Length: 82
View 1 (cartoon, rainbow, N blue to C red):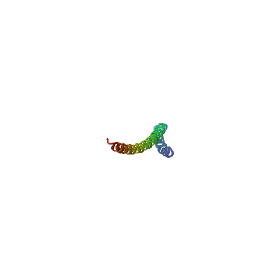
View 2: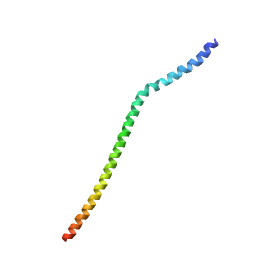
View 3: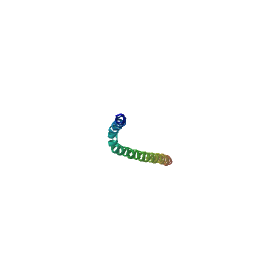
View 4: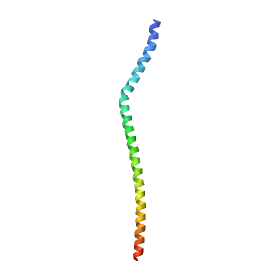
């Protein structure tokens, strides 16, 4: 009799634990896919950030060239008297 009580005290919590963990285990594949999708988006965001920084540097370079060209035009105009 004592053997059955001890066995029940061990098995019942294990069954309850298994029933509680089962839904979590069923969600793991979806969670894994979601994590991979988030990682892909993070990688894309990093790539876009790098591209934006590169474009910003190009824009700054072009701005400098534009200013130099404007100064040269002003110099040419002043030499022509106009």
